[in-house]
Length: 102
Image 1: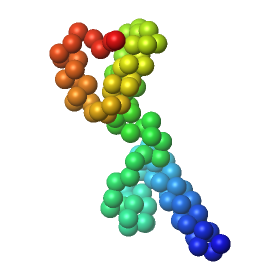
Image 2: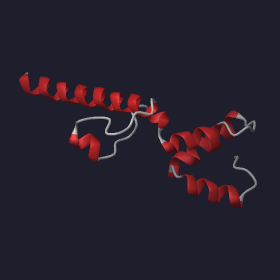
Image 3: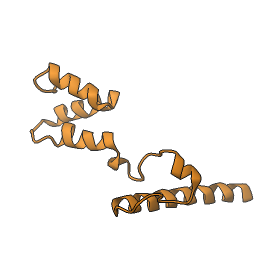
């Protein structure tokens, strides 16, 4: 049981520290945002996945780009983008097709 508690404690420490880093960044505090050497040196995904660069691109350019799409077309667009999950590939498709729909 002690081993499991150590793992849980480490998990919650990591989650809490990542959240604190996130809050410090959005409040424009200067780095370092933590004393943890690993979190200072290595990159980790955002505390909220929706805040990462690719997810923001998906929201702004694939889903909410100002155009109306049917539910089927929207599902197709999202699944297609998530298949490669890369902005440059989406841009390449847009440059070669008028729009991306079924």
